[in-house]
Image (cartoon, rainbow, N blue to C red; front, side, top):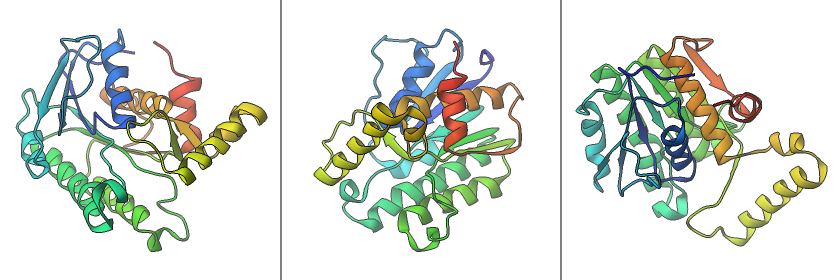
Length: 242
């Protein structure tokens, strides 16, 4: 599965847990022949020194929408895995500015500039019974609704469960315990049981990359495509091929 040489991919959130895996998946894939552009606060990882990576580094996130719309070449597909935590942001209000407001502004800038496809890594539970009362779900739901309303050629949403993987910052004790229990389910019961609650970051990344490529090639199953946890596992692990 190849990406057209005339196309370009832009990744927002390329230094985060899922985003760094998305970036490395593209850069290490022999199928990738197009430029991979990123916008981030700090330089994204490029362990293979790939010449396909074209990073834009700017610590002022308010400039990112205009930076995105002025990228050359203009990306045909934008993938955003941008997000933070309440603790890292310093409270819900600041988290909302990143997880909701910045993602919304980036999607709008992408559409106005002529980007064809937008892929967003959201979260499970955004449409659940309690989602309207949970701030985190409200943030993700608002971004999803914006992307759908902008009417891209393809709007693609991934809704993973707990995201497993090595993080740069240590987890607090309760979170570490929860992740340990989930990993235990996969190790001692079955991987299928773990898949109902959580996915590895590299699996989510694989699903995002494959979905983006399918959109680029006109093979996405729908204009508005939502991948829940089971389909993320299917695309990102069970059907992943290079």
